[in-house]
Image 1: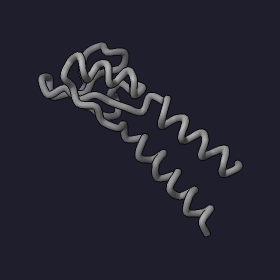
Image 2: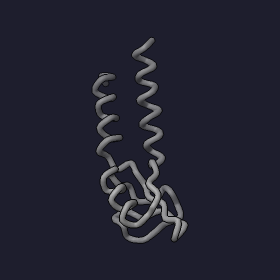
Image 3: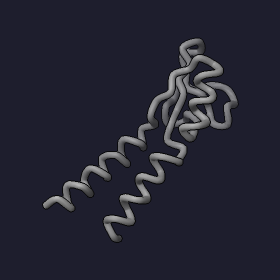
Length: 86
């Protein structure tokens, strides 16, 4: 795959994708998918776009966190940049 195309895909996913999770200090748990309760397992936590997560976090005083897969995308992006620079 073309490096430039993959970089664009990653930037799009990081910008518009559901790569954010929410933590509730009140419930000591993550928000579940579709705002339907709470879960203790980060892998089962709901994934939200940045805009969705910010609205929830502001209204409910929750913590907005990057989902684990966001780190994988950022690592891949850094690897692509390094490859281009060689």
